[in-house]
Every structure is written in C-alpha cells, then in structure tokens.
Image (cartoon, rainbow, N blue to C red; front, top):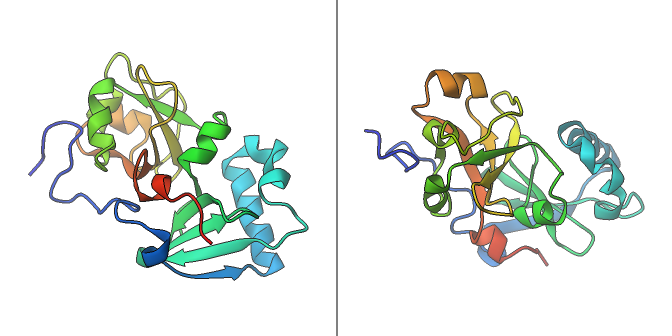
Length: 198
C-alpha cells in the first residue's frame, strides 16, 4: 500500500538514527588497525574527492582512527575529539553527518527536493521519486544506486538529509513511484542531537 507522495509506506525501513543516543546505542569504540584506517581513508576520498583538502584536519594521520559500533550494524567514524564525522551500515558507503556537511557544503554530490517533501524527510521518511521531479527539484548530478547523496530542499540554505541513492535520475524520471533515496540521517534526529561519542 503506497502512501501519499513523499510519505512512508508499510515497507519503510526504520530511520537509522531516529532513536539514537550514544549512551544506549553505542556498544563499543575501538582503534582501527593501520591497514583498515588506510582503506577507510581511501574509500572516503573515492566517494568525496573534495575531502582531499580537509581530510588531514578531520582525521590526522598521526592520531588513531576510532570507530564506534552501534545497534543495527551501524558504525560511526570519529574525529580526534569524539565528533561523529561519517557513518555506515554493514557494507554501505560511508555517509557524512549533516554537521560535517554544513561545515563543508561542497563535500559531496547533492540533489534538491521540492519544499513539499521536507516535512516528511524531517519525520524520517524515505524520499519518493515524486519529490525529485517537481520543477523546483534538481537531480542534475548523475548518481548510481548505492551512492551517497546530500539532500537540499527548495528555499533552504543548508542540507536537510543525507541518504543513499536507490534509483538513478533516469529511473526516477521514467518511474517516479517508489523510493528514490533512502533517508539515513536528517535534521534533528538522534545523531544531529548527539554529535559526539565519549
């Protein structure tokens, strides 16, 4: 059963950080072996080439790379001060937190939704294709399914969501029904409210 455009349906996956709190959700933190740290760094630069200029500031080479493990197979990549910088679930791509995106707005690829989709996004709903085909929306950056995307909204200066592409722009234009982007982290969710791990 499909709900109204932009809304969740019965198949909606639980938003990753809707009920997140570091005290309850984080089970352990550990330093990565240097080989894993190098591979995380390489993956980040592959998905976010614009990070090149700031990656040493975010993840200094002389300091250990720390990952926190959470419920639902989620991992958090922490900066030296315990700030969550990126996150992933199982083998998904690493996704930047919105606080990082707001600091470095050109960090990654962006799509824009029409303003009607915003209230649903901020409630944790996945983003349906219809939110991207409005005349004020924009998917001019081609992204394949599985790639990270930063979601901007009509009339807003800052990104409101970070997600994973489920359908390419061509697939969305051809058939806007169904989920276009999985909403993984949105403004005022648990990760936004608790941006660090002690």
